[in-house]
Length: 389
Image (cartoon, rainbow, N blue to C red; front, side, top):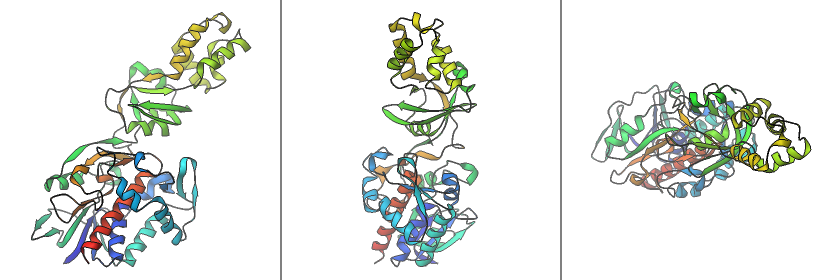
């Protein structure tokens, strides 16, 4: 059967691309190996789907080409998606840092996208095996269907228990597109035996500024049985490379605070001073690490300043990350140098498009990656519709 477009993947990007093209008159088929659509949407945001972020902007995304996302993001914004949510009567609320969530269930977002697809006459086949992809005479052939356009919307390998794979990269290479080495992103770190005292703090959460390779985020951190997690840590993990230290500001303004404690409670020890600002277990661990045994009144200011430097620039050395199993997204992917930023179309392969997480564009934590799915999906859908006129 002949279609205008075959979209591989019934996730957020694929469904929005399908709806956009279908409602503009294109005949669209969506194929997915899963037994239900939008599986990553359903588990996101604790089941309430952090569907976008009020602050979504190009500088909130990582890519080999930092300007690539600008075109799609500007032509389908967070406000456009929010309009769609409100047209479907989905109640929402804003949490910290501009994050938007459904009041009810993430299922509402999936149902909204499916309804948009129904309005566009989109055909969706679930449990479909993609198999070999043929290409000739200006048409792509997949699973017994043919189309002038093929959209790679299969995501990346993060969260493999949901059925995620790296098939997008195999398809891209089949058509001669480059792939930037994929890696887990928005993912917890593991710490080794040299920093086992921090693994012993599992369950301790605290506000922190985390830094890696010039990227800095101020949010919560959480010690785990194997290392470090929490929003600030997940954020910087996208910028981390093997061997890089992660620097934490455990106590901002530490020098001032320690000198003030010395004046107020000269007979106290460092642990007591730190416990005024940090969780007690973390205060104890940092005091032991710094190793000042004297009462504060007997500690020279210069020594307190060195202790403060440790508190403001604590360097930890992850041995690795928790990998794709715990990663919220995949960094890297189909090289943007091979794609048009306006149409998401492949240069040199007319009719081939790549969108969403499959592409080398990775957003911050907090709804940014969903916005990239919507924006890139809309860009491809519009391009397909215009080509079919």
